[in-house]
Length: 258
Image (cartoon, rainbow, N blue to C red; front, side, top):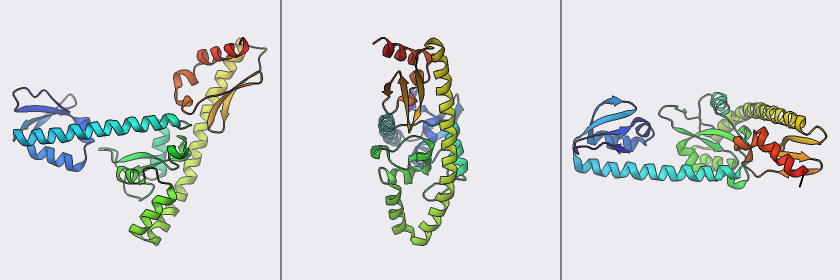
């Protein structure tokens, strides 16, 4: 977004916003202004043509609005999925893929970022957010894949690049898949350890109660004296609850004294 228009001749744009613009929008913007410098995370500029600047301003605002809507939709979908991943898992995936797109082997650039996290099995089809179901793909191929399966996107790519190209790419994917499973096992082990610590702490408060707080499949399950609590998908990412001794203790107490 533009800030501090002042006398209609100068202005500024957040550098983070500028870095995340499409190449076309960047080029259009730079054609209408003269960059004066960077201060406190904002790129200062002088407007060369007010009319052109107004047009590109409108385009950037529309782009930001659509981007925010897309991110909001992704967040809503993530609530529907089970599992959890952390920044170190995504970095590990980046290294496992050797900095290349999972589907096309095109280079993944961190700044300005040109890639996104892709759910191999789409969330709308029951795919989880565990590392075993995640890969990194260029933003372009991520949009094209959308809710398609892995098989479908490779069928599309085969028509574009041929069978031999896809065969070679699948071999690359097979190597990455083995590393993805290792990343996934590590994440699950760490989560189970955290849940185990919470369980141990709660047991000290309720020594005579049979309590089990652990991962069952892709989700967390709480067992209290033959009562099973199956939490909804996405609960594991609500860390203030799922990893809170106080919150889980209150649930246990409510079950015991119901």
